[in-house]
Length: 240
Image 1 (cartoon, rainbow, N blue to C red):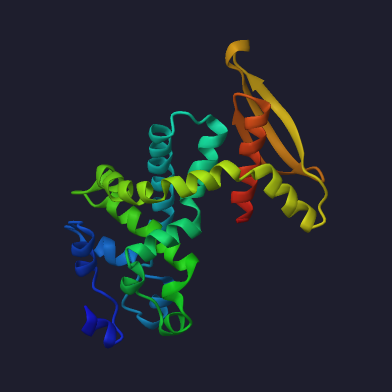
Image 2: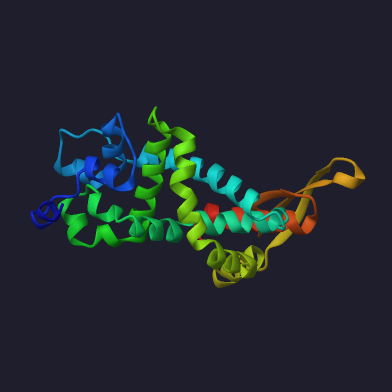
């Protein structure tokens, strides 16, 4: 491994899999997960980067982390669960997981991207982590149970710190701060629908700025639905 890095070569996918305790019968999947699009520009024989796996991994993480939060935080209501899940799947948090697993050493990227510090950049590390999760999910001998085992120790290790951050993180306040910094005024929250019996109402709320909708959320109360709408607006705009 050391000689590879000294020679300017990334860690091999096979070595990474061994180091992470993952058995891939299709190493091409893991190789693709580690391949940034800049690598294709300098290696015309390589036809696929990791962006499709990143897309899949993002969806798998939403489910796995959502289930983990639900099972580990029974005292939380829907709004708090949403904030906790959001805090755990933020790119900065995924980049932290990637650093802990030293994924940067195995990433395949173009020389320019590498020279400019791509192996340490949050957005590339977080995206690669998502792609690796997508590859684990697709590997026939691994799948969803393996993703759960892979994620469990990582999530456990940051639970208390992220729980504190999720408790004090207020999406409505954050979105309002952003809107005012962009001189867009104060967000308005409009109930667009409500359904269900009186004892189990579901509210759907849209957050708007200057009559433009930025996010829509559902919840058992208007307050929860507003927080979810603000959170979705922040995610859509990629505001951290």
